[in-house]
Length: 235
Image (tube, rainbow, N blue to C red):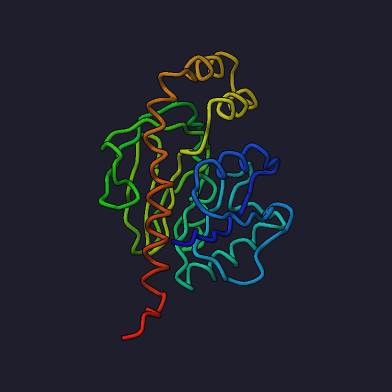
């Protein structure tokens, strides 16, 4: 069975940690593009698309964002399976006609999320699970025809439309990334310290359950690819 070839749009402005985390979690051949640097695939010859988080907001007028939205829209229209994480989740909502807005507050740290839908993306994940979160924007209105998959008291944390999935939380984070991200936030010192205190072996172990979404997405993308591949076996 051949490995999937997935276009990985790295939207992190300093992408080293993001690269490491996604390459560790996705069992596929990732073809990486530095989205913030203006790199996008030349065509749609992939088995799927994964888009990372970002420090930017999807509604900002940064030079790289509009072309990224256009390419992602083309990929979705072509039927490529898509998985967006955090900013990639918000980008998906925007491209499909939903709404993303500033929450006016910040969700950060290991938080409980509820699986509210019925989707193969969450197969093997408990109805209530722990995940690391870090965002101040949220999907406040789902795209027309989209199905909610996960949420908590802050915001939507997952939805699906067709072959496209998005999750707001960060299943790819290891503890080092969580500590680095939390330490760099412009939030009161007391709150940052509470978040750092919660980044421990116990919470990380709980959050590892959510990593199965990567395995499930790869399995789903493989099913889509194989269903579209003509049977070459002679009759």
